[in-house]
Figure 1 (cartoon, rainbow, N blue to C red):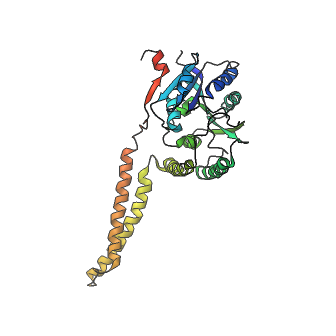
Figure 2: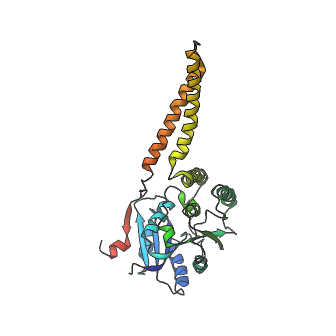
Figure 3: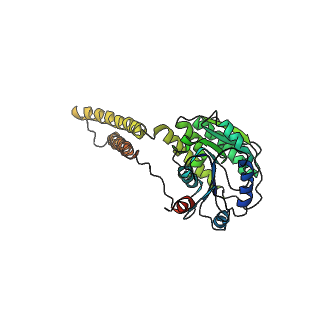
Length: 313
């Protein structure tokens, strides 16, 4: 296989054995009419059913299989797929048949205008217990990040190669890829996509994703603003607290010089406390500056890589 391809389709899957073959057939129908060299990358995120065996049964040299040692999550699966992809354009989609492959040409057309294009499931085929919290989450994320798209949660997205090669994902950050791309200076667009109801299998996401999503939103916001300058936030807090403590201490010192007793004043303890806490915040900021260059977040183990196997590595 050539190292340079036009298109990479990345599909993270976890216990989707019933959907794999049908999804592959639909992809082939769309990709066969595109005049592009492509690869389909299935990232098996530690499935416990026959997902891996089902993918391996497909006889197609355009398929690449990555298999994790255990379930690491969607962000890790996407990150691995991004690193292994060789296409000039990258499409990510879910493996549950809810994303329709017929949208791929529209993504590619829109990528002529934007560096990244996110799907928008206008008519989402999910229960209210998922759609209502998602709407609230999207509004909050749009307000905080400043990225004017309607659906951050949609896994159906298109990218230019340079975008996926310069985004680091971990935790639950796959929800915030548009914000991370925007923060990097890439242009972000959106298209409406058709969303189908799930027929086989069950959703892998529960109510706990809301809490994780909110916590990760705080993390992403902090990273967007202060990742390269943590001393600015911690040092700023430290300077305010430390300066307040010093001012209080100077005031008490002036009283002590004039003969006024200060040993029993609560203000003395406050001044000392603020000075110490201020110094700690500044120290924390300096430590943060020391570790900002630590960028290795690959905490997953690849158990099987079909491409390396084919090339005798």
